[in-house]
Amino acid sequence: MSDPIGGAALRAIQGVGGGQGIGGDRGAITVPVMREGEGSFGDALTRALNDVSAQQDKAADTLGAFLRGEPVELHRVMASAEEAQISLQMLIEVRNKFADAYRTLTTMQG
View 1 (cartoon, rainbow, N blue to C red):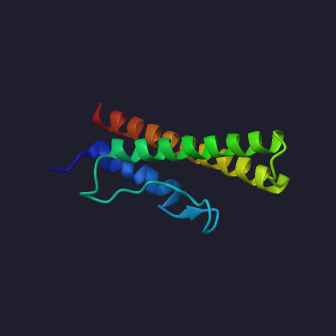
View 2 (tube, helix red, strand yellow):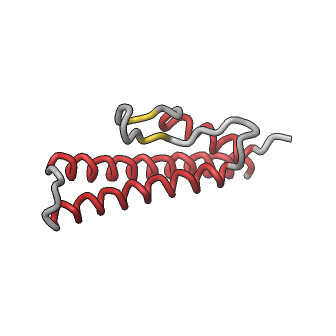
């Protein structure tokens, strides 16, 4: 049996990034794209939230090391902060696409 809300949510996520990485080989930001039989949609969102949180923590650690005078180059601090910002923006867009898909489904059913 097909789950209409789960299917719409998957299509919304795939529309945002299609599962493609952003940012090259190192520190690539990925959008969780699920295929049938690979866990639940909630698991994918949990992984995405954890990835964004880890990216934010990494940026904070890099900035802290720079401020303490440890040998961290300024461009590494800036790159880390930018990666964290982009990953957060991507997560927000995924949320927006999911909310749009949910609203579309609720209006179709009503």
